[in-house]
Length: 369
Ligand code: NAD
Image (tube, rainbow, N blue to C red; front, side):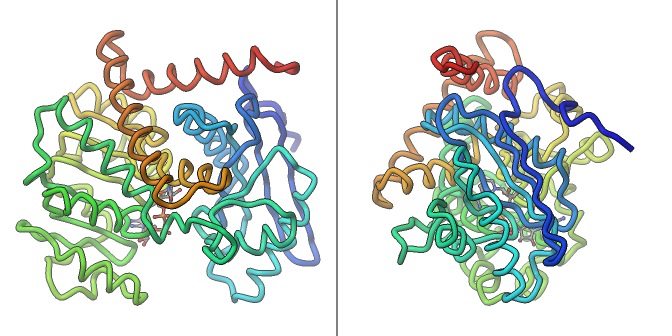
């Protein structure tokens, strides 16, 4: 079967696609450098057994928009290694190092961490090819998952957006799907701002507590390697039951496409703040908008991590990175909401307009457009 390699292309990108295959190692991977008009692409290396070229392309485009919307001097790209991230540590190091070696010449791409990879993996990448972001502190990095850069930015976006639907953060009821780096830090920051986290889920199940979960205890449990269903407090339900919990703010912070045409009607919330990348299909986003549910699109709301990575790359301190995240995400959320109101369009459409305008302006200044 021959497939058209340009089937995904449009006037923004992709700029380059690299397929990596090292049969002796069982290594298969893909890099999509989507657009480099604003600068070399920054985007994570995802390690997942079910990753595909199409997923990689969609994630790379999301990075083009995310980096442009955030005003970073970087284009968008993404890489996937098609393998189980829970493989033995020595095998994982071999995979990551071999992948890094294979993409050494791709100067247009600066790798960062993503699902299935972490700061340690980025240290191996940096060791191989001399460039990576999301590094351990020992290598001059700002460990973005440890400090909760994305959860911090997500809370800032929610804090700006809540006024447009007349919602107070104090007492707002929040449900969070996924209690990893993004979900647990979003929970901590929002609880600190007065919100009540009424439900949280991971692959083991959903915990529900009407009067609020004990966030500090859940975070400690997860950091010890435990599962949410091992917690003492909270009603335990199936993982998918998080979709049915009535709340003011629903936060997807796990996998792509978790809300689709088939389950969108089950969500009973006033705002969906996207911590995960592409967690809601386009049809489901349209259905939410039609019901008056405010959607904060992924590349505006979850840009905290990449803003932190770009600050690290530019040599900034952790305090400066957090201040930049707060300022950029609040300003972008305000601008997106204003544009959506002025033009009577959806929030994602407004966010894309903002980002695309910057990418096209940058493209007009480059030789190869
Ligand atoms: P992570 O691996 O630390 O955590 C993921 C969590 O989701 C885990 O608790 C896991 O148990 C849970 N999960 C997986 N499948 C689930 C399911 N079906 N139902 C319920 N829970 C499920 O990952 P992360 O870094 O927190 O990233 C989460 C998402 O946010 C990903 O889509 C990632 O691409 C995106 N994202 C992350 C960052 C970042 O800074 N880490 C930045 C932007 C976007």
